[in-house]
Image (tube, rainbow, N blue to C red; front, top):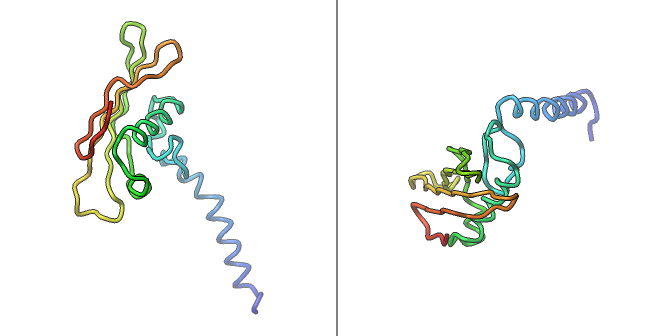
Length: 135
């Protein structure tokens, strides 16, 4: 095996990528791992991590996806809003979903509405354009 300068240069280049990539992703608004299961939110989304995780559990448990479908699809929160209605915090999350390997199908849309009252989250609305979901 050769252990000369080319190997050292490759190692240095790999370390440089490992150091610079997280900084690049932080600046661009994305992270390596989704903070909410399988839903990707923009870095400036005003949705707390616990609410993001709850929204993912809603998709995983209340929509008729098979396990492999959840793993193959990408889920992106394109519209995430927070409002206060009579003392209840309401989170409206619009999600676009597609199969990353099959770009011929149009993307599917989900709409989730969650309410937080007294520190407790509850589902108040769930619609989907492509799969049956049970609110």
